[in-house]
Image (cartoon, rainbow, N blue to C red):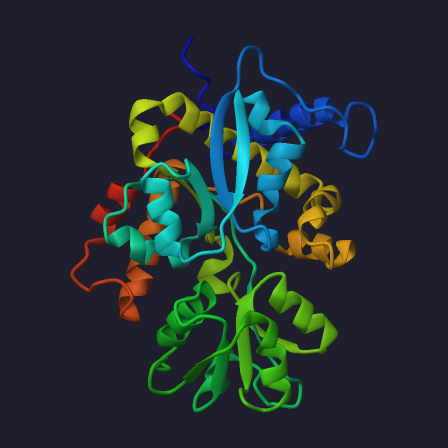
Length: 343
């Protein structure tokens, strides 16, 4: 039987179908406990083993945990093993491309450049938007992006998604991110100290680190990646091994659909999702994790042509700041790295 294609539905109906599917799977997983820790939903027949790489310290990957704990992956016939990957993006994409892992979840603004180099990894869906922020002290006088001109910004990595994103947005408002703004790298857990000591005037990073600093140090949020044209732009994406897409499309489809349903469930149950994720972040406050998830756009998870367009837009953006080669055709690039496994 041909799999049901929810994208044949109008967008509002598709979202409603996703919510209904997610609720149904979640209801089975709840097992009557009311807490979401009951027995998992199980698919009929043997499950297909699959390794999914993720960053266990990043709250924006909470739907991955939800997919496991609430039975969404099993509902689609998958026995998912989570691989906590802390290496470089190049190493992660190489691991996926060579079969050491089958798929991974990561940030579009970190993945686009390595994918330009030709890794055999296919992007199948966007997961959500949000989770990157730029902060300053309330006495700094920095209240908007133009206020960064001539200032120093602390980042955790010179190729981090946050550094790339705010460099792009500065460029768009006429501030040269390379000559008008100074960037200084620190370990993520020392960004707050660098700001306190006056070594930098602002800091940029992702949740949960940057959110926690904002709250604990009473910092001002100058900007984030849900402003202006980016309020409906995805930032976190799912990438699948190219050979898996070609040889076992049903598994790639099941993984993609399961994660979309888990993401929708996360949007509907942020507190429960935060509780599930907190097992991987024992020092984090569940209430704050819940607030972070509520600030993310977990209902925005584009697929098909809409997702392919967003990939091309990011490639265009990254060309403006010299990350992607100026001669790269963004539309052709997006078509090469995207795989439509849901139709």
